[in-house]
Image 1 (cartoon, rainbow, N blue to C red):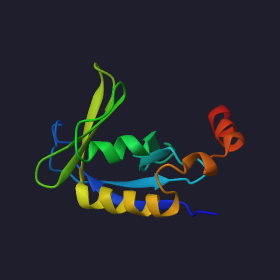
Image 2 (cartoon, one colour):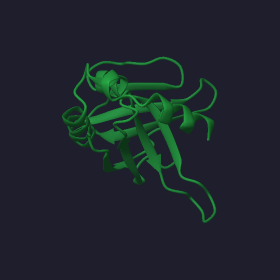
Image 3 (cartoon, helix red, strand yellow):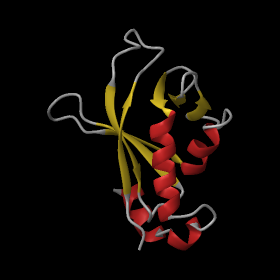
Length: 134
């Protein structure tokens, strides 16, 4: 069975009042839900829950080379070896700038565990449904 993949990542929020402050995050991939990847941030205060955005692995891979996505998640190549991930809606959004090398290494690790085109063979629908209903 393929292994889960996680990779620490330091990101910035270039459109925020603090565009140069590094935020610690983590990229995640669960081979039982092979179409998606997660971008997780730790709780800001004790008692808070971590914040995790789940979106398509293919979206992240395509967005490395050209603007990709619609709706709540957009991914596009940035400048100076960065990837831009826009999360949210038209009225409330965050633009996250991540190092492309880290994203590329993470994607390579996920593709080594579940190659593109083989996702359906690894999909655990019962587990996915249980997570949605939890």
